[in-house]
Length: 394
Image 1: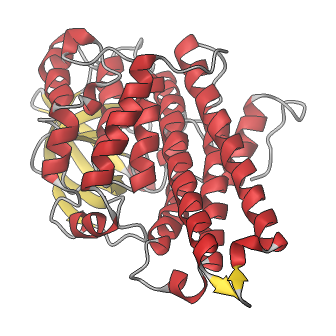
Image 2: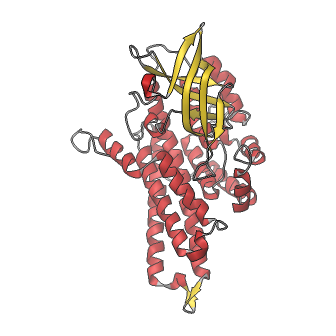
Image 3: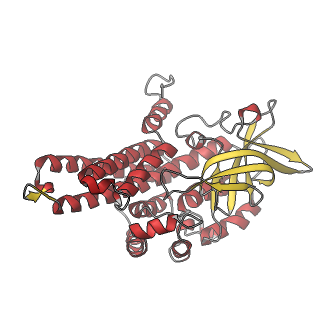
C-alpha cells in the first residue's frame, strides 16, 4: 500500500478545508441545522457545482468526476472536521452507489447525472434500526431484515402492472428532505420472500425526527399505498445482498474518514484550549497528566486515520473488506476525543454555547446509528472466522 497522496487528492483536501473554514464555522452549523432542509442549500450548491462532491466517485459517463472511494473519503474527512451538515453521505455514499450497481441503463442515465450535479439528492430508507445490518456491517443481510408480513417494515405489492409500497421506515438519513428515496421493501409474501429496492419520488409522508445529533438530520417516512418504481429488475440474478455488502463497505470507509476528521478537529481545539487555560499560575497543558491524556488521544486518532485510509485503499484495490473495522476504530476515537474535550474544557465544555458539545453529540449519534463498536468488531471477527467459524455473541 502506498500511503502517499497524489497532487489531485491534496488539492481536494486543501480546497475543501479552505471553503469550510470560511463558510462552516460553529455558528453557521447551528444556523444551518435550524433550516427546513437541515443544511445550508447555498453551501451544498457550492460543494456540488464548484467542487463536484456528489459525483466525486461516479464515472465520468454519468457526469461524475471519475475518482474513487479514496477521494470521497478524503472529502468526508474534511466535512467531518467542520461537522458540516449536508446530503453528501446519504446521496454520494449510500444512494448513488446503489443506483449505479442495481439500476437499469435507463435509470442510471436519468438519475446519476442529476446526482452528480447536485440537482438531485437521495436517501436510503431501511425499515427499523436495520441500516448497519442491511449494509452487512453488524449482521448477515440476506435474511428478513427488511420486515414484511407481520414483522412490519415495508412491503411491496404488484398492482395493475406497477408497484405499491406499504409500511414505515424510521431513522432515514435526510429522509425528510431528499428528492429521491431508495426504499428497501419485502416482496413475495411468505412463500417467496425477497428484498428489493424501489424508487419513490413523491407520495410518501415524511416527518423530520428530533435527533441527538442535529447536524445529521433524520426523518420518518411512511408509505400508504405509495406508487414506486422498481430499481433494476426482480430477476433471480439480482444479488441485492451482495451489492448492499459492497456498498456498505465503501460507505463504512467514508464514515470512518468523516469520524476521524471530527476527532482530529476536536482534539486540535482541545490542545489549543489547554495551552491558554491557567490553573495554579500555569497553563493546564503543561501538567504531565494532561499531556499524557492528549498523547493517548493523538495516538488513537492516528491509528483510526491509518485504518480508514487502508480501508479506502482496500476498497479501490478489491482487497478484503475492512470498512467495518475501520469504522469501529474511528467511532471509538471520535467518542473518546469528544468526551475528553468536554472534560478538559471544564465547566464551559458542558454549555450549549460551546462547540465541544456538537462534537460530543456527533460521536454519540454516530454510534447509535452505525454502531455500536463492539457489534461492528464482533461481526467482522465472525466473518473472518477468528473463533472457529462459530457465531460471536454481540
